[in-house]
Length: 389
Image (cartoon, rainbow, N blue to C red; front, side, top):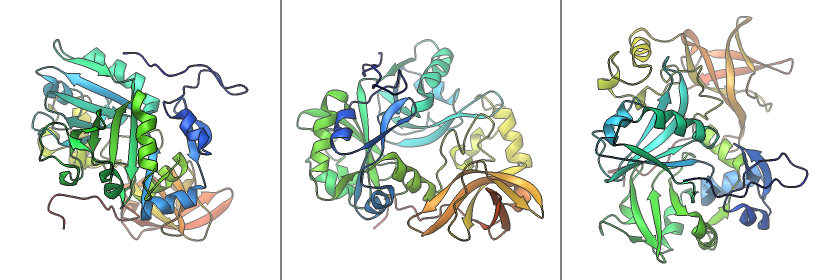
């Protein structure tokens, strides 16, 4: 299935930048559009700070339709995923989701992604900037009888914040399969199909802000109507890429192309939780398994850490991390944290200096900034988990 979005460039801008189904919707609401991952996307509406704070207090609506939505079908799709990714998917129950990583042969990260077992198939969401490379990489390695379908005609919306359930619940979604799988019954990293006004929706209780919330897959033809219905709820405002980035940074979540890359492996990125014990062996059967088994056994030379920075100046990607006059690491994400009212950063530093409480210095535009290693996340996650009150 090929992309159906408009390929015509906007006058005066770089050609061949794609537009998303909600492009006109964003512009009509004052979205300031920028190029991101090959698409025109809104970076902000009323302002990053206001949008960040609104999402933390209420519910923010994000358009993440640039992400790749893939479906793997076949009797052995679970086994095919385990031959590609370091996670456990043959044991993943229907309706459950799992965070995982697409790895190169040397264990470097090609992408991070979310896999959902939908029962008859597996639904995979990959990053927008890497989706076409991911599709080619995965397709070339699928066994006979397992197929991949790119849902290029679907939009993806994320509704995030403590009032997300209230807002989405007001739309009257009806379970499309099991009547007991209501919206309220879903907990973090669970998904189910729903119907809204005759429109099929794929809904998961997930997101990338650290807040409770949902991601909603919908055919592009119905994206505007769904966005309008959500925005009509008093709890909801449209939120741009700027606040999405500050929210995920506060939540200590890595961003592909910054905190993750082919030069970084999952162990040093502190993503070992995505690799279960039975797959931490050299013969696990996925790309990079031997290298990761060694990293788990022997440790790594560097680790991803959080940094609290003194003062008001932010340290951006590429800033050097210094200890005793020696460069010991590099900032991969940084900015001002509205919820903490101070600058924060994530960086890779020598493992010996990755202990919380370690004092370091950041070199930023000729100035030295005092920083302290802290445990991630910076802002507590507020996911709704099973058994929570």
